[in-house]
Length: 114
Image (cartoon, rainbow, N blue to C red; front, side):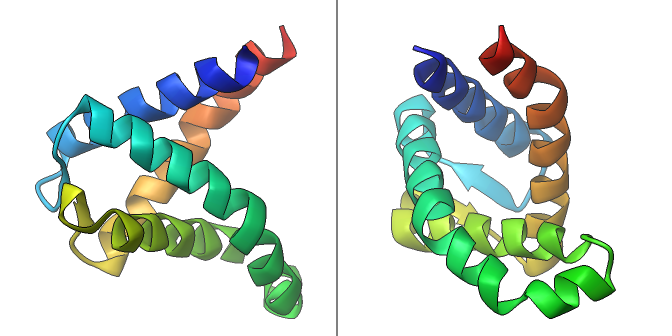
């Protein structure tokens, strides 16, 4: 149940980001739910591999490179979704990853711990 709540909150967050940023487009709420699901799968499968290979640079940057890894997973999600979900530029992906990370820290993770 908590996973479903997190999935819906992520979908709502993606919709909010699409409203706020010009280069961030998502076609609808159903596409946002699917994108949230795809992002979850990518975070389970691809992100640990990226973390393993970028561990030295992550340590050197004191963990700030994790933001780049989150942006890459977000761009990979946009690539998988095709025209239903697009992000124009790496900078926007980094900004969106930062906002998603902050919101997940303060909103979604406390909901999962409840």
